[in-house]
Amino acid sequence: MAEPYEKNGRWYLRYRDARGAWRDKATSARTKTEARRLQLELERKTERQRLGLEPLPSDTPELTFGAAMDLWWTEHGRRLRSHTIRRFMEKHLRAELGPLSLSEVGPKLESVLSAKVGALGPESLNHLRAAVHRVYAFLTRRSAWKGANPAYAVPRFKVPKRLPQYLRPEEVRLMLAALDARWRGLFATAVYLGLRRGEVIALRKSDVDLDARTLRIGRSRDSNTTKGGHEDLLPIPDELLPWIERAVETSPSAVLFPREDGEPHAPEVQLQDVLRRALARAGLVNGYNHRCRRKGCGHSERHPYAEPGRCPKCGMRLWPVAEQRKVRFHDLRHYPDRRIIPRLTLVPGCVRRGRAADAG
Image (cartoon, rainbow, N blue to C red):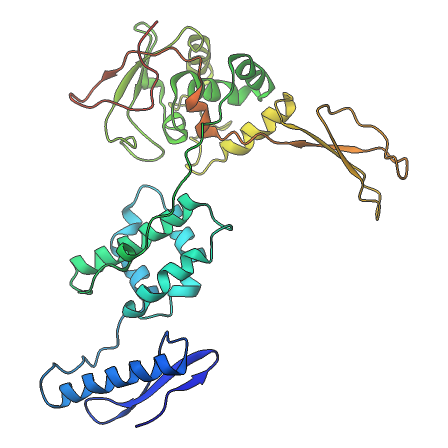
């Protein structure tokens, strides 16, 4: 019997397969004793195959996880509304799990995800775990995998529940004033109706009924349905009505809030960056780091104001850098002063969550 051997930090088994050919197999063993135990189990299995007590292994090599990811994306994933999951999987799963066979992923998955704690938040780690689950569930439906789904063996990471970030009423007015004119109507609609990014950029003039003062929400990004899969008819609040009227009058196309050339915004438009810049211009920040930019000085001091002073070390004028508040565009949905607006759901039985409700 050949002895296990170590190569590049991994233990390998050398054995004769059921057809008598010598094979080398990489393992996840951490010690030579553990590798010997695996080799004994493997030799017992090949002996049973030679005696006809177990079926012979297929000549077709086992699918790697990387190939399984590609197959899942080609036949299923590309039909998803958002394609960000593909980039996320490529970045965080391809290098570690891609070269492994499907049966080798299970023992490695938890350690791969645990190694990313700190670099990724718990919610992002749960997204990676769910992505692996999706791939194996897809393979199971196609009869390309008959074992247990390895994601089941990995416990979910605990996501701390925090209060959402939001802007107060007076801050919303300052934010709108700091925006370029072309963005104000779009952001006002997101705030006062609690719309998602994809929903607000997909609005059309035909969705507006100024006589009835209602706005139809039925699309998202480049899709003909919203995330919830249904349509809503929302009353337009008094604070929002002037913005909607102006958008209907000035838009050069059928889009309610288009780009300057009249075309709709791309689904990946970075409204987050527009919001952060507007908050900085409006002074809605956590404070300012005043830094000396003289080479080799490195002095820095924090103040609640932006007026620059002088460096106490070299006398050079300090450069104030705003410390941004962690407010996302999606957090505008949590605007606390929005009165509860009665919803008229166009599809019976559907109730849209996250909207403002109950008119005062």
